[in-house]
Length: 171
Length: 389
Image (spheres, rainbow over the protein chains, first blue to last red):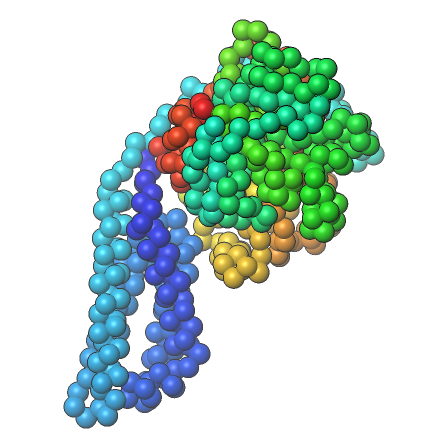
């Protein structure tokens, strides 16, 4: 049994994969700028680790034959991001407006991630029967019996292994 | 007439276009009865081949009935059934006389552009990039065949389209891939890609007497078809290609390796695949040469690499150290189709092989655009699509 591919969900997953890598690179490249703009000074290491997570998830989505678990991984990461951003929403944070904006953006991304992950999961449940081509040999007799049927074919001189390079005792 | 035309990446349409006309006394016009979508057409579909123009008629695997012949063509007559090789050759230049039809020196009218890209121009090709002439292709109701007194193969009475159609490309391509390995009875031949060319390479290697033929792919239907043809199979998504090849060759590696994949390798979860995709995305690399790298690494020293898979331009991180130090030989190129057609036609007539086994889908020309997607995504067990204009 094999999974059928589902064009739009796969395309969306690829888009999320690239987005993940881009966001992760930004978090890795300028953790100080980002934490400052969110009023979360002192969380630079946390920001960098989130960046690493984003890059790894993005690569996973782009390289895996089935990106479904990686997209669900993004959903889990979103939950982590939302939890972290929630701590920056309290009244003492002078940059809480920025944090609120970031929270809303992550919320939107989470919705996209959930839509993508559920449609990929749904696709995976719709399994397609693998066609049986075991009778399509194209040969008149079993392959074992046809082995060497064209052995008399005269390989052109320009495609032959030069005589001095042939293994000893062969041809 | 109706024809499948390229309008950009993933945009193939069935358009109405002007009928072709005789332009040279050696030409013929062929009314297409069957044509096919080739794996290399997918490189056009995916937008990886430079030099395409909107409205180009695509397709290079076709056959049909001659309906008009130029005044200087002494080989064909109206009513002949012919299969037309995908490489266009004049039959007179130095390369053609040596049997190197796919690098004919005269059939590419855009030779000067190809010279700049490749150093020297290959032959003109039907329905491909303007780098190889921009000739209107065969996924159409009618085709103008240049130099039609040279390459077209006349079909003997009583043979079906399905039996002979693939003489124009994929059967001789798989055959040449195996022949240029110079297979010995002690050889293990490993073949990457169990698409149509890979399937014919498998059967060719078996017929030429390889001790062991191993096919590498991930699509269950294709692996099943490969086993039917006598191959041992490796699903690269489920097991390590390197380890399995090692096991199957007592740790020595296959003597002969065939790349029937080319520039769009779908390796999963490997670092080099990730690297290629990233570089290709930013247009810093044209091809994804995972198979070339794997073949160079795994091939037995003093072995041969045969590359019928299509590559377009620049490839990165090729392990030349392994290639050089192991003393490997690489043979590649577009297929010199006419070098093999007489022999292969005889083998079909004698029943040694029936190429129709590879056909999984037959549809009308109007369904062609949808079938490009089906074929590309390997949906519905699709291995080979034949179109009936």
